[in-house]
Amino acid sequence: MTDQPPLKLYTVQGIIIGTVIGSLAAGIFMIAMNYVALGSVSLAKKTAAVGISLFLILIGATLLFPTQNVGVTIAATILQALVAYAAAETLLGDSLRYHAGKNPTCLYSPLRAAAVGLITALVVFSLLVLATMVANAMGLIDIQERSVGA
Image (cartoon, rainbow, N blue to C red; front, side, top):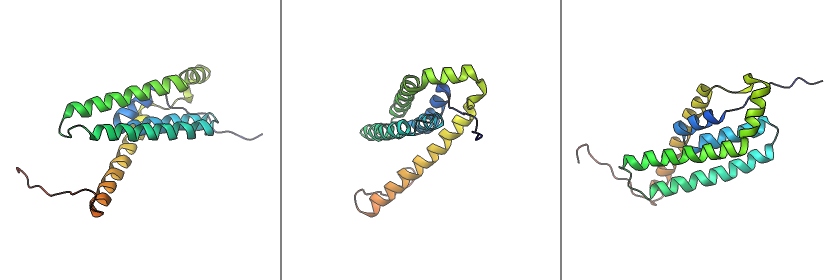
């Protein structure tokens, strides 16, 4: 008999916390990891594909609005958290409640979910900076230096 590692899952609450900190990318990552832990790798791949597509659409839509508007940033964060909540609850809610009822220690802490969100935020930010630098080098966009107070 093989020893299987104990089942560990991210809660819906944790997925929302991670999403608020690290964008929808973090929430989708945690949902996909839950599917992997439950043995549904094909569902994890489908969730990741749809989630990444939706994340890119939301990022693109956000770019259509003025960047200096804090309200847009807050609205985008709330929208991403609502999407993550709807996805997590619809796709995994019953399964999470079932496994938590059998073994409450099978759930990751909200702090771990927050850490996943923070790491995801750093990765997404780094990729956006890299994409901006490449687009600037290729002449697709023009980044001009502005002096402070200008």
